[in-house]
Length: 424
Ligand SMILES: Nc1nc2c(ncn2[C@@H]2O[C@H](COP(=O)(O)OP(=O)(O)O)[C@@H](O)[C@H]2O)c(=O)[nH]1
Ligand SMILES: [Mg+2]
Image 1 (cartoon, helix red, strand yellow):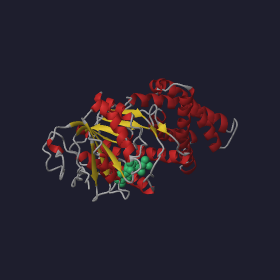
Image 2 (image 1 turned 45 degrees about the vertical axis):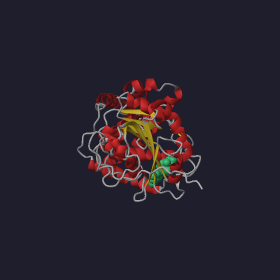
Image 3 (image 1 turned 90 degrees about the vertical axis):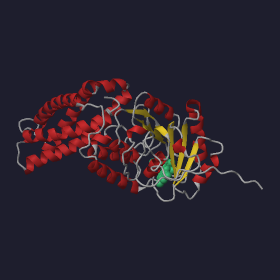
């Protein structure tokens, strides 16, 4: 009879969700670290957390691919930490069996807590890396991107995010409904928590690396899935880098995302909004004042276009169209005028990096959709100011345009030209 040696598991830390500084006294912060007594070892370069729940069919493949990828660049100087929430399919046990063949692999089986965000944090707490990272365990995040993320950190970024929305990024096979939902969530984030959500092009990314220093000592308090929001909201992140990636379709197992995660996302945004109030977000980004001035001037040219069109279409001495119809038409012409100027001038630096007719068309479609939403707001405001408050139609129009300009600037900055911290 042979008994196979089983490698010890990491015991899940308990207590506050706080990442210890590697240099400080940490014996009472990392409780119950068994086996290799890692906290007495010297720090290592990189710790990558792989959170799993029922990923039994994926775990061997992801561990193998990550090891193949990292061994040549970080031989012995990294750790892969699978944090499994006591999966019914016993993912943790399968991972544990892999430890014999993959010496950099560690496994944590959590039985007291559940949830993606806390799994990641508990993994980081038990880790030794100067650079911390997270990657999904289902191979939807292409492992190769890790090398670019590591390079970005080596080049000085505090946070390197794999993004579906920057150059080279995308989603493989999403339905329009799913894309819409994802964008809607981002827009809500931009409205509720602009200084946090606006810093990256893919605030919902679950694939990123950061320097331990950026969050060491902060008490994290996440809700649901979006751990990146927590890092951006509570950490000290100066330089952000982004690397585009294409979100792969799941081959094995199934997604754990339900409506609950959308609700939690909203609550998380609100909670962060209040708890980070007054905190100056650690950023080297200047407010995009110059852009706003340009956008404002372009908007002003649009006002003239809009006014002239409104006069030509609605004035009793000219075509005498109805007010709403005239306003929609006038705004559409103004939108076209504004796009052309903004693309050339306000965001000319970004546009010149995203060349090609298709990309330009995409920017125009986004610009149009955002302005269209703004236009609806504009028409409602104009009708309210003119019909309800009895303000002169042109003054009412000016007021409505001013309010909608702020909406248009912010959303277009973040969604059409995608200006984030990494580009300023
Ligand atoms: N430890 C842990 N991992 C989780 C939990 N929920 C999801 N995961 C893992 O987190 C990653 C992303 O989850 P997934 O359901 O694929 O999300 P989606 O890609 O957005 O559909 C996968 O590796 C999951 O196994 C959880 O509650 N605990
Ligand atoms: Mg997934």
